Length: 489
Image (cartoon, rainbow, N blue to C red; front, side):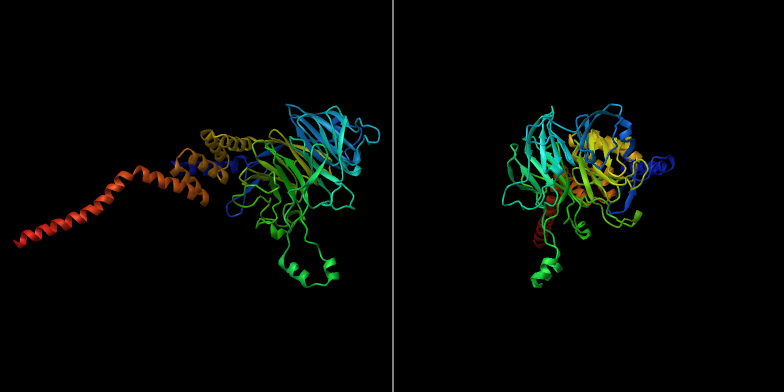
């Protein structure tokens, strides 16, 4: 039965190659040997939006961030000191609602923005704006009334003397605010809902190589001052998932630190600031093969991240303009995108956001918002992962079957079918799926359960055979002994 499915899947893959299922050709995954495997598109461009499409008098200037709450999309237009609000409609169009350029502020408080760089909107409609050039994160209620400002910490743990330039902001359900500021490498600056600074959160580990470390030990004071300090790296962006955990990305690291999982460019931070991101195979670092395409020789550098309600997280790579989607086990679902000027490609992508399963990507150079919607293939992948998470293993397996019909080489379909069979207690079938794509860890788990099941099912006759093996020699020995006694009479 399983072999027949493999043949059907292989035939489907060959048919797909000749019938256009691989139409665009820039979507891919990696196999177990880290080789690129091309895939049908999981997303396609639905539309590309420009300022003129909304009748705006001023073109976008240095746009820097996107945020979605419900069916409302917010864009931070830094160069014009404003936040643009759009309604995302069912027909996948954006309708301009308003431009927020000022708010109601008391005397002595500046009621406009100066080069804002990020916005977070809470469930009650409150705005948290990283008002960068004003050196504050300002909180405004849904009616655009000033509430309070989160400013430079007055605390010995904060390095004074630097201009306070908040870049990114998120706020949890309790009103606690987490701020990323330029040139602050201690992680997030954390505030209580009343504006009180309570310390730093999620600081990166200090990294260094032993050669530099030993050289510093024997260098003179003047030489040490000229050398790079061993300091934590800065996060580049953050996203608060539905469970209240912060996903953070960073893009400052040494390429050699990537594949041994020292760099950790994507992290999921718990209440204590520790990284709890699950990684089963290759760490989620974007491209595993860097090459020299388009003049780029460097690994992926993530500038933003978004997390869907199904726990799939999608990171935006500014190096090659690509999007990398991972499931909650850290396994790559798909990757797509390239640098360029055509629809779906980017010159300088700086922000990614989702509304439902649809994705918005902001390009700072071309000043565009690109809307991606999932294809049928992408929906099958999402359906399979969501059904599995909900415990609907039969439905999950059915969706993975659909994935395999479109792409017989999609490794995670085999893993998904194997895991579904494992949950259905069909251990032998699970082993067949895991063996097909060399998922050794899953195969070992399935084999352990299969061995246990086999022993339980056959324990009776196994014991009978053991008893016979023990009893027969004893009986034969007794019979022979009795025979010899008879012959001696």
